[in-house]
Length: 476
Ligand SMILES: [Mn+2]
Image (cartoon, rainbow, N blue to C red; front, side):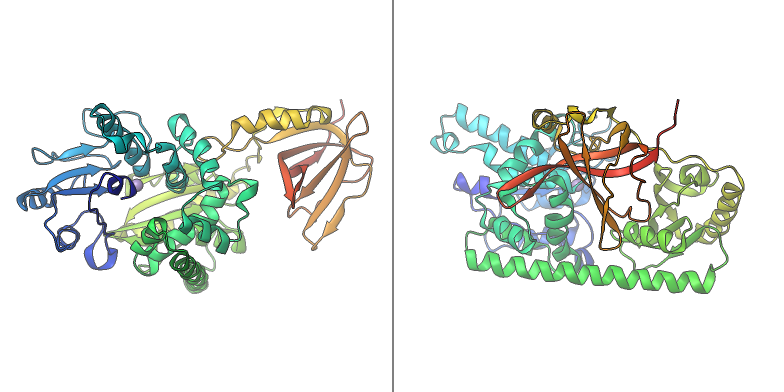
């Protein structure tokens, strides 16, 4: 929108109302979009439309050109003349993993090059880099791998986001309690900005979030950010009520089952993962929570220590539409008529898994360090690996045979702080979240696994170890 307007186009947008108009590029959505007063001559569909053959023909029949920018797999051939910007076209696929906003960036880049070749003066006043704040947000929130070009988008884009000139993003960061001057991290996008932007689409009209990103009016931006924040709280409320409903279902029908499967046709597939985590933790049993989308039940499974969910489900794979994941977490799509069968299968499979010897929980260690290796210079170099996220997880380091000289200090009953010193006597501070029930003895050799971060407070920052796990050293 912003880019098109710079070239003097009169651009309008709509976001589909999922409940009334359905998902993606439907006839109803297309009709509403084209009913904008003046006759539209170009229609750009984003993140949808690849397989909307009839709708594309309808848009063309109205005398309108159509560009589809999308990353969903193409299954059908679109009418002649439709411009499809999509790396996943049958027989012509690429291994690109851009999400739609990344593709939009590519499209604007292409248009800009063309306009510069044509010596359009506007084209020389646009810096595409200024759009990377938005590109990085979409790339992180859509959970595409943060490797290759997506990594460049997010690395540069997160810096752009921390000094964004977009008033709407500034106010949204403020209501989210973010302090952008210390930099914006992928977790800020995933847990603070993203949920608030998405909340309006779940509960009201998603176009509110788009208006916020486009607006130059400070008062409107603040008011809208506060609205999105309250929608987000409402969403959390809904999550809580689904957890309660799921628990009632467990008590009623599965209290004696070793593996739990619960289904709610009104549960939003976007929250089932969180609900499954809660249930498996509270009942200390593997759990699959299914919501409904279209004709399918879509859900998430979460396991408990020692039970491999991928192994447990593999015997049922011929009944599943699609599924995948890792030992502790899976995603499952299943026809609703098979859910009952899944319930009894899952109970048996978990019984069998419980009877087998448990596998030992492991941690993947990036590398072993000596404490004296952890210097500000090391941290500067470590920073080049950022941003961490999908397919570029934050490394966990480990150090063998160290001693806690001072007793760690427990706080809030759940966590503890500790201080270590390297062989030159330089102190290193650390924190251990949720490990207060397992505090290492002092003056005993232990191996520790940890993450490294700068802890910022006010204008100061200090190096901090975040303890992930520890064990007493095996003596040679
Ligand atoms: Mn998408």
